[in-house]
Image (cartoon, rainbow, N blue to C red):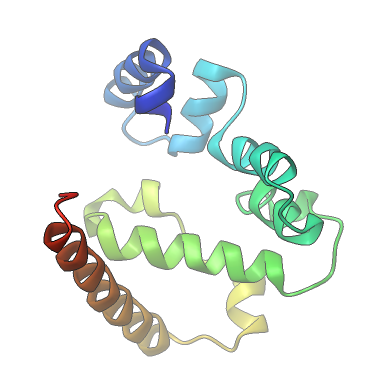
Length: 139
């Protein structure tokens, strides 16, 4: 989204990303833009009339300690973020992937073999969607 709608800001982001390879993207987004993708997602959730609880989970998925709710939704979004990043980022980019929050892992009783299964399922679904996009001429 940033690359499509905020080209000059995205260029600044890429420069900062290259200079600060050990800093998570959302921190660089805050430095360059004054906000991060989670906050943008939260704002868009209001505009698009997405349920409030889901919007909050999107907004705080990198900062669980700031979330005032007590439902599983924030944990789901946080886990999904971790699984997606650990699936598609190189393992050497651990600083970008981060770690699965201990509370999230405990809440779902999630073991490493569960995470590996979810990653494999995600890869399969991604490949299906990529094939579909090629079939309809999008990619």
